[in-house]
Length: 242
Length: 242
Image 1 (cartoon, rainbow over the protein chains, first blue to last red):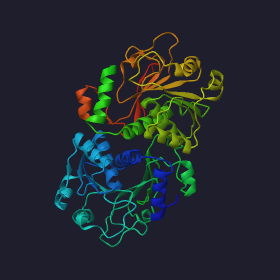
Image 2 (cartoon, chains in turn red, orange; image 1 turned 45 degrees about the vertical axis):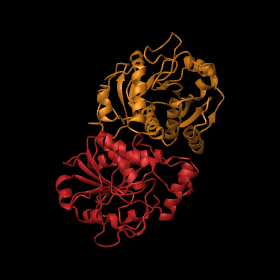
Image 3 (cartoon, each protein chain N blue to C red; image 1 turned 180 degrees about the horizontal axis):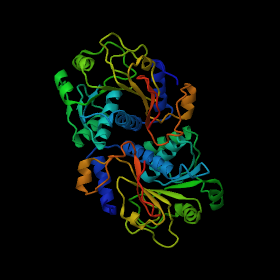
Image 4 (spheres, rainbow over the protein chains, first blue to last red; image 1 turned 135 degrees about the vertical axis):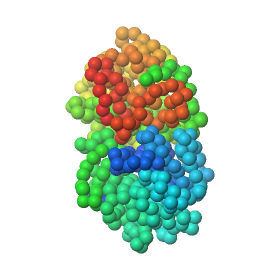
């Protein structure tokens, strides 16, 4: 399977919107849904605490997190959203409203390391996506500090936040997700995963676009009803499941 | 499980958009995806011809059909869309474009009964939804005639077209779907299904809204990653699956 570089990821995204005329609402809904399914597939049987901290950044990666949080409610999780830098775009205002209407607390206050370690069974990292370029903005320094030090398993959406999209971790303190959910197609940084499960989510890529970028994505064959599935397990347990 | 009357179905729909601030794009994507999954669950193992005729009406039921057709491509079906009465709403223009970009033929010409019986393995009825009131408009008389007579199995989305939303079939010639996919919650007409499988799709209803309408929907428990699942099989084979 091809691992996209940053410019390819940006180009694929632009084609989906400009050439294929998908709306952000559509693809974000499919992406967030697939993240919720991957999270449940990865942790549903093992995680003891149902409280999940979903950390949402200011862009589309944060939007994916808001959608995932909403679907997690219907899968019997208790998501709490940390969402410090909000946009006034209608879609994002509505995504937040949908979360709050489902009973999800959406906060601007960064939780402490102690609270995260004590109360949450899982952290979803939806801070920065494939358009991220280091360094991390100052407003996100506190939550990045928490994610770098927490003992709670981290699920990163598309890109482990703070990682270079192509080169991976920037230093020894970079976050170490135990699960990565690549959206559309994996990005190059995914090759630097260690001791982690790697899912592919958001199965909506038109065949012609797959061909154009030589994505070589797996098909639905044999796994027809999943929207997310595991493609690699660097814990050395390679498996295929729903 | 509660079966909604027509006014309740309209009220639930309005609340999802007005109170919960979902966009049509979001819910139509989830609905259409769940239809594709239900169709594959119901027929994936048995249907020989992969060509599927998707009949799309002028409103949101037709939009669900366009979304389902697109997802069916990624599940190795060959959908052909019959879409005679189109709206100029941006979402619908884009949904049609997405289908065509996936290689799906979208036609305004009503196929003959002979062609349908000979070429297609399945017909998806996405003509009219929960806001339908008889009689059928003249423009849809030809396709209704085909659906009433075809020997190919019919999957109806939300409401078997031509049926009264509460009272069911209007006469002996009314279409006889072999599968119904109820969206959000079943409507009263579903009680008149005979020799059919009945799925529930579109699992996105906020808990408070479920309570308000006493919907008593099944939870994800034990079936966590499905977006559609069978709730009844009037062929007398009751089962639960993905």
